[in-house]
Length: 345
Image (cartoon, rainbow, N blue to C red; front, side, top):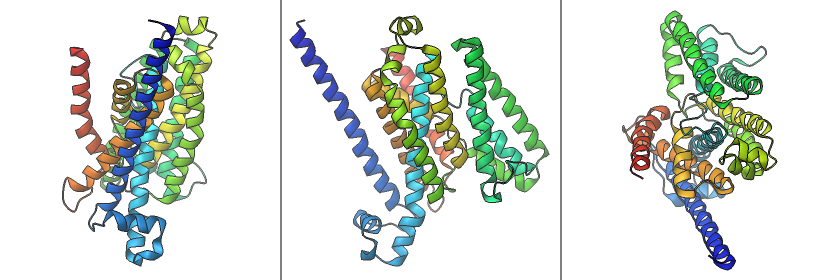
């Protein structure tokens, strides 16, 4: 092929990837609007838009339901999807492991342990208000688990050791959570089990603003490292020959992963499969170019979470299911289909 034909093919590929990202963004906006319109009281899409952008045109009841109840719920689903899927995409890249996600390496288990200590034993971060104790505990433990993974990565320098250590953390934290469940009272046990299912019921504007701020702070650093992350997919040795400091790149990615995953889990509890399935779907659509793969992963995870939020309100009339149950129900067959498709190819 000539240089001109190669340049034309490259531009065509870029346009295709841009169109895919744009289509995902439009689908996400449509899903977000649908999520807000649905509930015990249904609203027309036009009324929802008026309540958001021109609230004086709708009734006070509509304003309260849309702006104070449904909008934080819907936005939290989107932000959690962005955070978990982006964290999963970066973790799969730096570990070169398609099964890697923040949860397979102990982040969710650590958050569950922190929440369990607050719920069962009322132990938590000193000075934190009681209403934020569970959230603060979950964040501190989740963040500490990834910092521990960073320390192991610095000492060993091996990806395999990091994965094995993460698996050991999962079993250790789960055992301690099981012990606390055994010691818990009936009320505390019920609260802990509900938290571990993952739920958007605790969504509020302060929670949305906090998670949104973390996402906005992390995304520019993720995109800045996109070229290096793409090169890392060629292998550590190839990346190092091109002048990339691979240990430093991994530590930076782990720090971003810890902030995203710890904050998301702290507010909504354990949400499975988003950080695993979202990146896989994005990779099938986009490929390995992280300039587009990372945004596509974030959009895909947000879309899956938004659709799951819709399903959680519609599956059983009058009941909002914990979204962690819905993501597991949706994620298992979706993940199996991806495995079978990849096996055939």
